[in-house]
Image 1 (cartoon, rainbow, N blue to C red):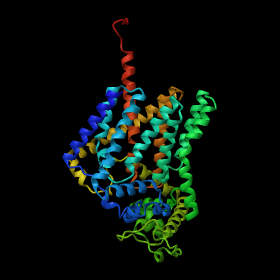
Image 2: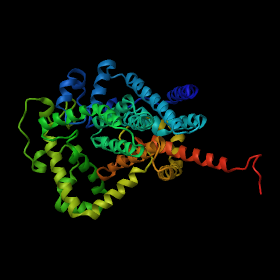
Image 3: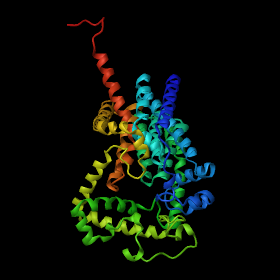
Image 4: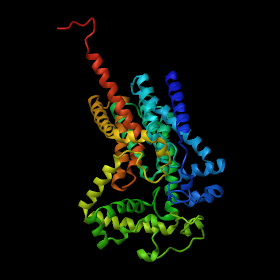
Length: 456
């Protein structure tokens, strides 16, 4: 194991040195004053804790960015160093998870390094966005589930639920991921008949989730919504609008009955345009001012929460009265989900240009990889069913499948960024492909005749 970890580490850092000389650089600091989920950079630098309290978006990534701004200023080198450490951790966990699933160490080293040099990994590692951290957390969660199933210790349980907590505080869609974890732990307890001590261990391990409840209670107090992210209508409205402009039938229905769904939320619609009275001022700039210090929209202001509710009401009515159009939207979103993860449109093409022909080759080969992902999922499900989900590896594979399915729920509310959501679970897809190859080769080897086996 130590030798494998050393080889993975050496290969990872050698590849990052090569990509640096190729021209790959950390990008995204220029998006801090613009992207909706970030607080105003001056607030992150000088009033971090109070701003996190009044923010209605999930707080964790703003906290991380705020700490980095205090430590490094706006130096890309400091942010790049943090993301390189995340990438190193992802490589080590990916290798450890493969070997714990019974994949041979040489194959685990080779496939771990191969995954870590894929264009989407290189690109997301050099973008200021929470997706890369989310990817690491999903992988650690599956590894923790495997380890906890083998040895139900509080440490592994706390790591598992800490990943769930961090995911919820990064991305509100992950708020109920703890339920997925709970279902699989319950299944493990039922299958193995372990004593009630396991239940006590699980309850203690789930203590990190109290942080999620605290954030939800804070949002209920300030904004009247007991949730991590009260912007559901905003997110889904923004996703549906991608489809309304592309589909003439949906556009005609919205033009006639839901005109608000033709106004992109990110364009900060004026109150008169959508028929909304601005809320009373609170005296807190983050909640009152519609624009940030640099002139970009302030999506944390209370007015925007009311806009989000308007979008939410319109979308619910649209889905109820036009289910076939919504099904068309979901189908398009599903197709978008399985596109190459490097097709993300909201960052500069500098790093894509630096990868050049390598990225083009990846795009051409991706259909084969996508088929491999689907085959790996099918094999993991078949393998787990054949083993009756009765041991730690099959439980971990089942949990990985459930994690992928939970992540795919994004297709029902978004369109245009689903390739980014798929990237966060691609290490799990990759592991299933490698696991299927390992099992197939192993079974084939066992079935071959040996020198001591008579051949008829």
